[in-house]
Amino acid sequence: MNPQSIELRDIRYPSEIDWWPMALGWWIVIILAVTLLFVIIFKLYKKYNENRARRAALSWLKSIQNDNIIRSDTKELTKTISTLLRRTMLAYVPRNEVANLVGDRWLDFLDQGLNENYFSQGEGRCLITEPYKDSMSDENIDVEKLLDIVRKRIMLPIKKEGN
Image (cartoon, rainbow, N blue to C red; front, side, top):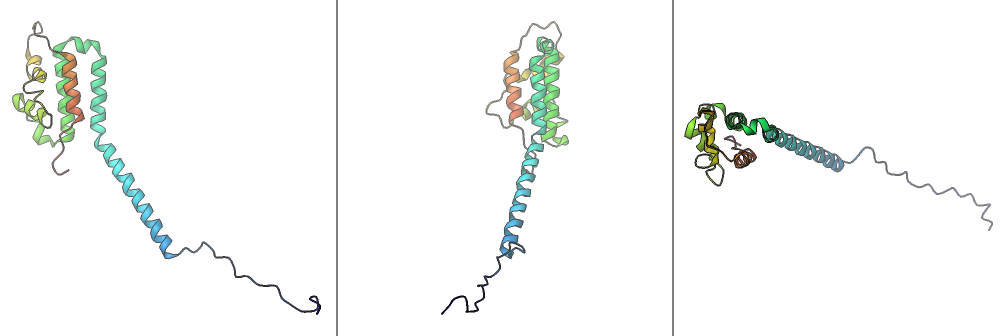
């Protein structure tokens, strides 16, 4: 028999499986992936904003460290550091809990969360005494130690209630 004489048709293969429209399972995977991505981005953004006050305070503290004029005048230094701490703590704790604190209550508040009483019994005590002393006062403070404890206070912020 001659293969040329037989009328055979070509084999018809099934059409390729298209990727579109996608199956329901793929839609679920895509929706879950996009949702997870948004949740991660939202949490990172929230964390970034929570640390905004800390970053600003550390930047201000660094400028104080680099400013020799402020560092040489203990009265001005303690005023500036006290303002820095007050503004930073107002960013972490509601205004009505921080704004009215003065004297030893303010220093006790600053000691919250620290492993030692740096402010109420240590070098930080000068924040409530030094700004009101006579400029000719002969009491010297350890500026480096004071700046170090302020940095510790800023790095370990007091959390807002409810967070």
